[in-house]
Image 1 (cartoon, rainbow, N blue to C red):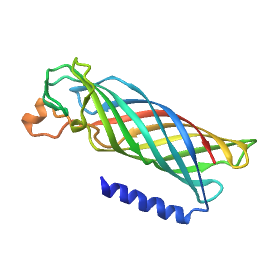
Image 2 (tube, rainbow, N blue to C red; image 1 turned 60 degrees about the vertical axis):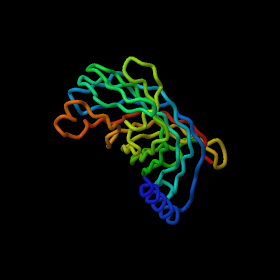
Image 3 (cartoon, helix red, strand yellow; image 1 turned 90 degrees about the horizontal axis):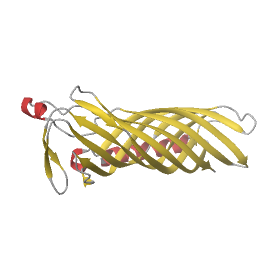
Image 4 (cartoon, rainbow, N blue to C red; image 1 turned 120 degrees about the vertical axis):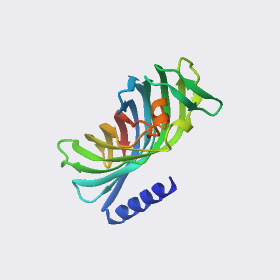
Length: 227
């Protein structure tokens, strides 16, 4: 995980040197997330409502183009129903054997460092419109879960991967409040690229196959202030 963080810092520093100006601020965002399994034996059983907050930073190449990054704390989660049994589901305090049809509710938190390119219009009235696309590296901060029929809230870090990656697309507006201060409103969809869980079902354990891939998707609506 350290090599990913070092690589991101190098990229951000290099772009900062080339940029013509830097803008930043603060934001808060409600987030709806859900897990999408690539398996016939695992199904989505519910979504999660959480939040995100952080610091957005734009390195402006010109008036109309920027490299957008920052750092954020984000809640992600959802529920999965496993049609196959799980011989070993590990938590900090216990190891569960889950029967077929068991549901696991995931409640996780990540530190996110988004990397995207942003295209902006000239200011129209007081409003600048923009579109953005990029990737969202995420580093696990906390992972809790309700296992089976139990509302346990157990620490399930052993069953959630420490690093997650998705791509995102979105857009929004920056509304001038006077001087360099702007109101930010942004809608963003993030689609997972990497496997989110480490859970192995009985079929995969018995056959020596890798665990089934499950990705994390989310929709967020950011509201913030830029300076």
